[in-house]
Amino acid sequence: MLQDGKLYIGTSRKPDDTNNKPEYLDLKFGNRHGLVTGATGTGKTVTLQILAEGFSNAGVPVFCADVKGDLSGIGAMGEPKDFLQKRADQIGLTPYEFQEFPVIFWDLYGEKGHRVRTTISEMGPLLLSRLMNATDAQEGVINIAFKIADQGGLPLLDLKDFQALLNYMGENASTLSNQFGFISKASVGSIQRELLILEQQGAVQFFGEPALKISDIMRTTNDGRGAISVLAADKLMMNPRLYGTFLLWMLSELFEVLPEVGDPDKPKLVFFFDEAHLLFKDAPKVLIERVEQVVRLIRSKGVGVYFVTQNPLDVPETVLAQLGNRVQHALRAYTPREQKAVKTAADTFRPNPDFNCAEVITNLGTGEALVSTLEGKGAPSMVERTLIRPPASRLGPVTEAERQAIMKVSPVAGLYDEDFDRESAYEILTARAKKAVDAAAAQQQADADQTSQQSSGGSRWTLPGFGDEEPAATSAPKQAKPRAGYQRETVAEAAMKSVARTVASSLGRALVRGILGSLRR
Image (tube, rainbow, N blue to C red):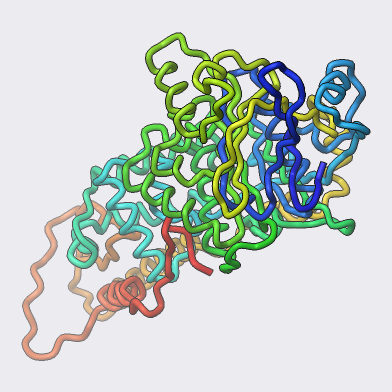
């Protein structure tokens, strides 16, 4: 499977259907990214599986999403089947040996794998705006919210923290607008409604602590194989925006956390982005530009990103140009868009004089693909019609009992399965509000004791933004006479200034964010 630093993909065929030569992916070009495309049922999942197997055996950790549920079989020993043995005989794969691979199962919902979470602060304003499908005005308010939280020492860990901060911003919109820019109460209200929708869709499970450590998806085993992290995404796909944003956040984390390594002999990690069209569908231009920048730069950090999708048109041209290793399964050409996709796919390959690429794409069989990888000095190889090798692991899903057994011996067992709720923005803002209310009440009582003429309907100190609302007056309050000279600062004014000082702390203390808004370590 692995020969001289190369990953075996399959065996190409001559025009007369006899074997041509083995097709490999050179590991030193594994971080030059890749693309796996093809219509439903043409064998993309098996291609993803055999690539993950090859990288794992080469000592490269792999992260991939199990969208349909059948990729989980990579953690179980392969089973002999007639059609698999037939393919092995066709391509000259002898001996055809079975193998199980080191797998770590993950699941945002904690049902089919270890819980995986991040915090609101770590996700950042750009990706959160994408998750909420925010308008430009709403995105501006979200950016202000993060600026207030980052500079003010208000950890945003989960949805209730963000909700508490939005409440504060809405109630003090006019005061905060003078310092941070215009804050529309209508936009704040719209964002709060979107938060409720996210909560109903299960995003509340994704935000919180303990947050995922990127190092836990970059593990290797004692025998030198790379661990394969498999994200259970069959339920997650019910909310495609959350799925796409989550994988994009992981890519952003890898970019911010990992050091520069140049061009290593093999990748530090390979990241498969299945159903890649969900990342780019309806994405704003600024996000696509940032993704292109991350894909272009993350190569030097030793990370290979492989997009898996049905149609090559699903990936923007600026990103498509960064993908050096390509496996093109069969495409259908019934509609004008499909015909354009066939032409696009054919034009991206280095031509082979033995066949017409555009014609072959529509006639490929299941488990057959056009393959072109980087070779030599990084130039693409001539495209070859290739029979993809059969997997060494199980073709199909593991049973629930097998999944639980794998999870029990997982190296991250017990690290992420329990929730942890430390003091964060919600608790801090609640405590400040209570302190301000108590101080105002104490001041009011002291004033009442000192001035017996004051009626119970007299003035009452409030702290804007913390829910300390003025009760309805039972009688008209007396007008206080202005006092000449120095006037002592009231409790409420002091409290408000204290909050303002905290919120407006120096930029030197502010957290630094990267290209996609994630926190820089």
